[in-house]
Length: 111
Picture 1: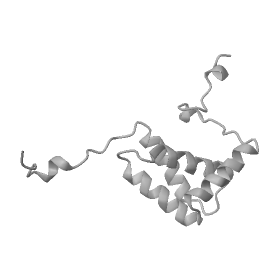
Picture 2: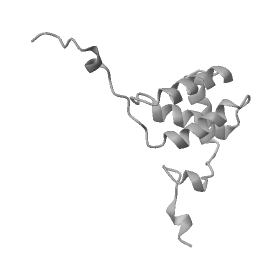
Picture 3: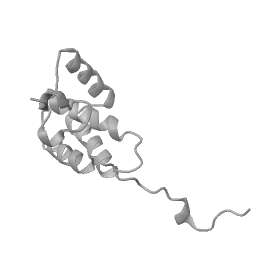
């Protein structure tokens, strides 16, 4: 069987991530930070992990890489710093608008 002469059929269709809009707001905020605080480092690390290998959201992936360059960090350095942050007892404060993911606890709303 001959190769498909239509190169468009060889292109991968990018997927849309369900948290793209929320994550875009976080990424835009991180882009404005010159010296990141612990919570900002953790946000950058979690978003890098979320989108690593994701077939889409290339805009977010590109900006996250740019943020690392602006902060003068490699991925490994970011991972080392965030591991130390978590070991020190850091816990994120969930926002009402971010009631998605592992930090969301419905027990807090039972009262």
